[in-house]
Length: 244
Figure 1 (spheres, rainbow, N blue to C red):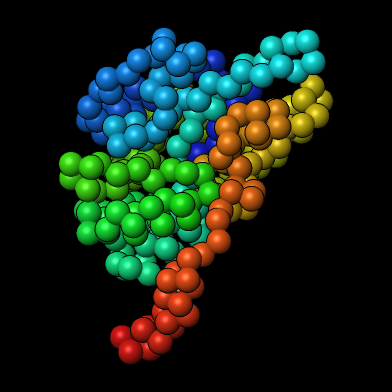
Figure 2: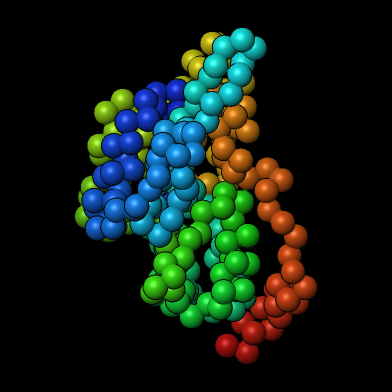
């Protein structure tokens, strides 16, 4: 059965333990950053090939009160991943889905995409997740720690979270936990919601309006139209399959 990560942002303290655990498990290089020169504690400023997970900091006024929202951003591992749908138009199976876990994975074949094709793949993602290592040209993002899951371990970010912000398990179990927790949160936070629970396998519980966390916190209205090339390629796919 598909696995799911549940992220309860009401419990996140922005300790960034998840962010560091991800880098350590995947052996990702450190980033040279300029944290105090752009007016935020968020560090680094954005996802990149060496940061599959990023705790986003968002400050805004709620009446006369300053609200500080924390958002542990990562790939949502969509059930019907737009990145894979777009990528398969050009090179099939460069992006794959593990049917056992539900993880969406970028393979080394992604190095074969042109810069234009990569941009189309990135733009197809409603959460603005795909990045590319410009030295190796391999695309990069969260893997859901698929290797750990197959060895009976939870994702590294879930393992180290000290506040219970992140939980991991079978999809149906996580949905039940999310629904129960949402019922509690709505008593104090009327805007509380689950972010795209029907479409993704990393489900965020939000206690504020989505736009107060991050521009791409939910998928709504964030995917652009297909290019003409993508449209005709999609039309041709059934005929390609018949020939195969």
